[in-house]
Picture: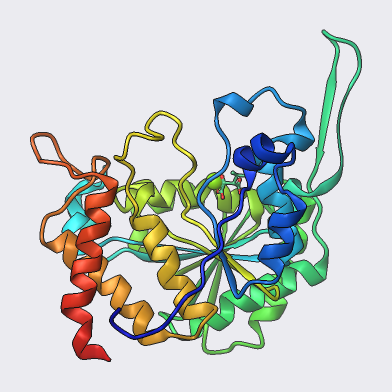
Length: 334
Ligand code: IPM
Ligand code: MG
């Protein structure tokens, strides 16, 4: 152990695992343990085996309930182009070089949680309804998170909405503009989500903090993952409540599950965020991030990052390299 901290780990089921072990995608015992913990690290939920279970039992419901129970309204998803991964991006290296985006996604509102949400009517003429709903207070608190974080970055908040069509977005724009007045050193620009999708792939370095609502953030963060080389590289922190939740941005990847080839760096970078935001161990967090950069610089690649003809290593081996780099590089940082 490099820094001499001791972490007590408790493992609990959620999502499909919870459903299998106790018929609930968020078992009571899991929730209670999470609420009594210093932080929560989540893998991924879901899989084809659960595609036909009733909607309230879906693995994803377990995750959404957990986010809500933890009060985790602010989802931070950094999408950083590591310099040795420039040529893993589907974009030209000169387009993606230096990209360093922090997506601040509202996580407890919008169409993910709005009521009513129903499917009604007879087969053949069914009608489904989802509700996008936002209140001023919800928008205000997430906007504040974005502006606060922008202050220690490049001081640009890009707020993404669909204010030309949606009432929720018009309210969003209004409230974000109002909050921005409290942060005169931070520049704010508004952009429609369709245009943001285009700008992200054509000029990713134009973004610093990207502030957006729940569903737009879900979509754009996968896109940002591809831009920086692989969604397997993205970690995230869901903060705002008493206990924060850390999870890689990627899903359960059923096509490679159990094969030992998944990229663990998204999960490892999520742990770095945990050290930073929950335990206030900034130097330790930076060591983990530096270890990831140095292992990539040394040319180690999981399958998602390897180019044609390049050797790929498995999940466990990548993990070992990170531990090795931590021991080697961070002993001095103590
Ligand atoms: C994510 C995931 C989740 C979401 C799913 C699994 C519910 O896609 O964290 O991006 O949509 O928020
Ligand atoms: Mg997603």
